[in-house]
Amino acid sequence: MTALSHTEPTGRAPYDPAAPLTASGNLRRRAAVSRCVEVVATVAAISAVAMLIDVAYTVTHNGAPALSLDFLVQNPQGLVGGGIANYLLGTILIVAFAAVMALPVGILTGLYLTEFARPGSRAGRALKLVLDLLQGVPTIIVGVVVYALLVIPAHLESGFAGSVALGVIMLPLIARSSQEVLQLVPGNLREAADALGVDRWRTVLGVILPVASGGIATGAILSIARAAGETAPLLAVNSIFNPGATQLNLFGHGVPSIPIFILTNYDLPTQAAVNRVWGAALVLLTLILLANVAARLLLARSRRKMGA
Image (cartoon, rainbow, N blue to C red; front, side, top):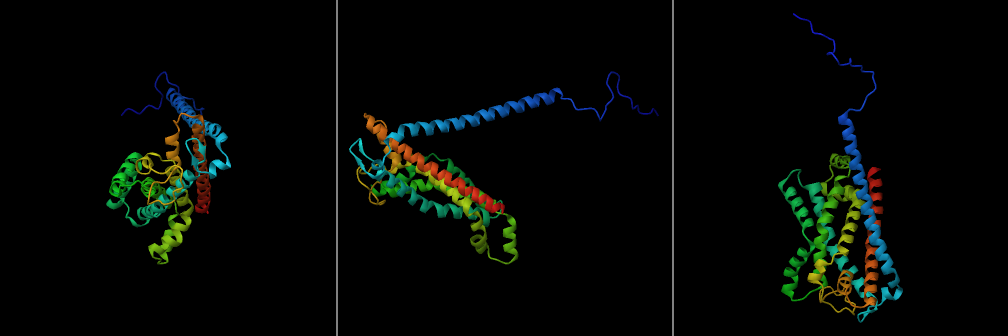
């Protein structure tokens, strides 16, 4: 038999494992692609921040001159006088009632998906699909559906219908965020409770929810902030009201809200009306920013609590 040759082919240097690595053409090409992706991602992030700064600056620059104590505590007087007190109170009332309806259902839905539904069960998969589809439904369609279910039978637009529409918008956001937070709760807490023979519902109330409360509150605040700026569903079910009166009865008539105020006043042919619109936009933007800051603080607290 012919012995195998251990010599390298002619024209190729012998392999030296101690030699320094040199970049091949393929490695240089991958490094260039990686660098390009990094640059594109950085530019996209800077663009997103720049757009947010531009929006915040424009609203602040145009809305700050209109802000005053009278603007916040007085009701509108005619087309260009007074303030937005009734619109501000109406927005808070509608959003608060929507949260009262959506929060329990959303949190319980997240608990069911995380703690009670079997992994891979048909019910769990179907519920997740429904939540994802509901989250992607355009808000104007939500408004039209609520209009058909509540406004047409009663022959009356109302703040309650607006709260129902906003509650439907909040529901999938709260449910999915609650599910994600509950999944972050360490599994050894559940195992310890099971080892002690604690009922599942007692484990949920006494162990799981206290640990995840900060994260759940964060998701709830973010969903409320999202709903507070919605205009399309309110336009469909809560756009007829007395613009100069404070309406605190959600069931008897329409209730003023800041998004509707902005929509109905931004194109009036007077500069004073436009200035009031900018002021209302600044008030709404400030409320949403404060809600987001509070949510971030709660999220940081929740992460420290889970890490502990």
